[in-house]
Image (cartoon, rainbow, N blue to C red):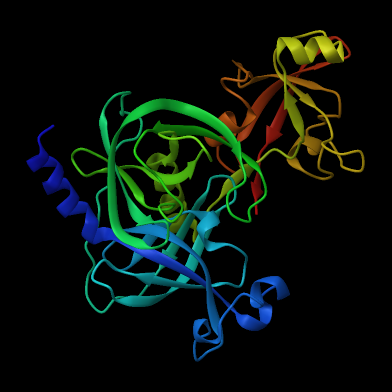
Length: 334
């Protein structure tokens, strides 16, 4: 692709890319962190900037997408700095409890430039992508170029102060994504957002990940329709099976998901949850979801991703060598 076309795309997307800063009141800071803060870093309201990242405008009235992990702990204060350098106090509209997505709202004095959303289901390995954001929390209005290196990637990661969690269905790219880029848009060559920059592999070059934009589109739709993000809940701890795991645990099948507690004091099945109400029990093996095999390639999270809170699903389980069908009405994750 010619430099002229790339430059035109950058000029179209950059005005809709924003910086997100996160602040806490100095009285709420850990003593160790507070000891490293200079008096000049505390503003007139007693707030101290503790983190930050990037975001992008999806509605000219000030709706902004970013990463959940960028925002940190509940109770933090958020400021959005638009590409022209103007700061706005931001309110949190919603956070996605499964995917690393958050939606902010600011009240701009005039309509903001918006970046259009693309179709993340149609992207192909090898196509050109651009990653926008606030690199390292220092260099605003930064862009890097790369290609789509892989699709439907799964990683388990701990980002910032967030606990480790599995993230599935990610876009892999070799476009540079650094701390501070998180929450910024990953666009195709035409300037349409196909993903939200979210993670990189520490100590490894040219391996970065983005959340497909279709997940954020679903969240925006929920917010408009229900006033909140509604994510489905099954209510179990489980272990996806493989040949090695099945052999070690001496299980009768190498496929499916074993319902098992994560820690000795935990419950494998959440009491009163959707799975419990459907009589799914510890040590059951979940084999199929609406007839589709549960596997490492299409796990529980993938099936939940394509389901809705309140939806009725049929789950085939294996219990004591006997297959049986269970009807589960999915709950809502809060």
